Amino acid sequence: MNPKSMPKSMRCAAVAAFGAALVTAAVADNGRHREHLPQLTPAQPAPLLGTCEALSGALAALANTTITATTSVAAGTLTLAGAPVPAHCRVVGRMFDRTSPVDGKSYSINFEMRLPLSWNGRFWHQGNGGIDGAVVTATGTLGGGPTTGALMQGFAVLSSDAGHTNAQGGPAFGLDPQARLDYGYQAVGKLTPMAKQTIAAAYGKGPDRSYIGGCSNGGRHTLVAAARYADEYDGYLAGAPGYNLPLAALANIFGAQRYASVATADPSTPPGLGSAYTAAERTTVSNAVLARCDALDGATDGLIQDTRTCQRAFNFMRDVPTCSGVRDGSCLSLAQKIAIEPIYRGATTRNGERFYAGFPYDSGFGAGGIAFWEFTAPLALDSGAVGQIFKVPPVPTVAPTFSLDLDIDATLAQLFATDATYTESAMQFMTPPQATQLHDVRARGAKMLVYHGVSDQIFSVKDTEKWYRGVDHRSGGRAEDFVRFYPVPGMGHCSGGPATDQADFITPLVAWVEQGRAPAALTASARGVGNVGGVNAELPAAWAANRSRPLCPYPSVAFYKGQGDVESASSFVCRAPRGNRRGHGAHDDDGD
Image (tube, rainbow, N blue to C red):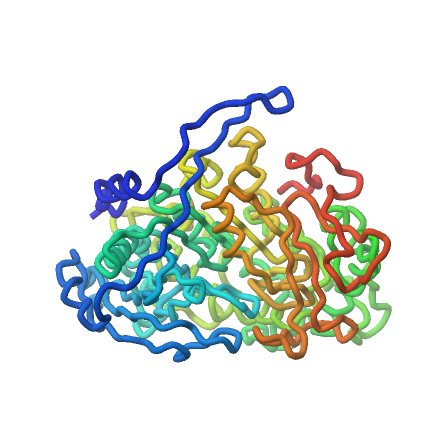
C-alpha cells in the first residue's frame, strides 16, 4: 500500500479543519513583488478526556493498528534537566504486522505516544537517530543536553522504531525490501494519520498544529517529511540532517580507506584505524586552524565564527606542521597529509568525481566524538548500513574487513540501483525527492528551522549549506521567508565539541509558525560544570561554564563588537562574513 495515498482524504480533511490561513497577496518590496505567505493560527489547548486506561477502547478501531497498553504516568516519573515532566498518558502499540517473504522474519512498526493530561493542542513527531530499530522515549528532545522538550512543553509526542527492531540483527533488516521503505519514509507516512486519530480520540479534537523534528537520521526524517508529507506538518526542526545518508556512509568508508593507508596498527579495528590520525595529531590540526582563523570574527576565544573566510585562509598542507622526524603528535608526516587532506575536500571516485561534500576546517577536530565517527563508525556502522540497507543487491553478511575492501565506485552505482526485489534504490527511499523544491511547505505557511555543527565529521555542514542555497534558489531568493539555517561553530554531530551547543529551537519554531515571529539570532550556551542539562566534557578549561553565543541564521556570522564580556552573547552581533556582503547566493568557491 502506498502510504502517500493511504491517508489522502484524511489529510485533506485535517488541513481544512486545522489550518485557517490568510489569502496570499503580493506587495512591492525593494522593487520586487513579495508574496505574503499564509499565517497559521495558534494551537488551542485541551484536557485529556476521561482516563488514560479507558482510552484503549476508543483506539480499538484504528486501522492496521494494535494498541498493547495505555498507562497513566505520574508527574515526575520522567525528568528533564532536573525538572519533572508533567503527568501524561503513555500509549504503546504497533502497526502493519507482517511476515517478510524475503527473510521470513516478523515485522511491524512499533511506537509509543505520550499524551499530556494538560495538552497544548500540538503534535510532535519525534524522528530518532541511527538506523532506528528502537522506540526511544517520546519526550521530543534533541541533542545538546536539552533543558526543554516537546513533551515538557505540552505537546503530544510520537516515537517509533521505523518498522524494525535491532533484535532482528541490526542492519540485517535491509534484506527485507519493505523494511527498507518503512525506514526510509513510509513509516512516517503510516504513523502520522494514526497519531492524529489517537490525539482526536484522547482530546475530542485533532492537533491544531503538527510538528516533526529530530537530529541526524531524525533530521533526515524531517527533510524527507517536508518533501513527501508537506500537507501533514506545519513546523519542521532538522538537526544535522543526513539527507544524503547513503552517500555520507560511503564517504565515511572512503575516509577509512584513506586512514588505513597510513595506519601503524591493524586498520580492521577502531584503535588500529585511529593510529593513522591520533588524538594528539587531531588537536595539533585543530590548533593550527584556530591559529589562522580564530581572530577572523574579532575575538580570540577558541571559536571560529567566520567559517567560510576560514576555508580561504587555512591551508592544510601549509599550516599544519610537517614532521621532519618521527611522529610525536605535534606534526603530521607528509604521507599522512597526502592521505588525509582528500577526506576534508570530499570523497571522490577513482577519476576524481566528488560524490559527497567536503568537511570544513574548524576548531572541533580534537574533540573525543570525532574518533568514533572517523574510526569506529566506518567499521561497525557504515559497513552494515551500506552492505545490507543501501546496496542493491545487499550482502547477507558483512565481513570484518568489508569497509576496507569495498570497491567505492562499484558500490556508488549500487546505491542508485534497483532490481525486481528492491524496486527503489537507496537514493530514492532514503532521500527527499526534489529536496530543494519545497513549494508546498512554503505555500502552506509552514516553517523550518535547520541547525548543524560545523565540526560534524559524519554529515557535512557543507551538504546542508548546499541544500539551503538550493532551496533559496528554487524559491527566488526568499528561503528566509520560511526556512532558517543555523550553523553551530565547534559543535560535533548533534552535540558536543568545543561549542555552545545548548539552545531551545522548539519555542522559536512555534512562535514563527503560529504567531509569524520570524527568528533572528538564537542564543546558545555552553554546558559547563553545574549545567542542569548535563555537562559537556569537551569544553576548553578557559571558557566560562555558562559561555553564550548568538547562533546566526545563514549566511550571517557572529562578530565581536569590540567591547564587552567575551563570554556573553550580548557582546557579539550577526552580520555578513568578511569580504562577502552579497547574501544567500554567496559562498566560498569550493566546488560543493
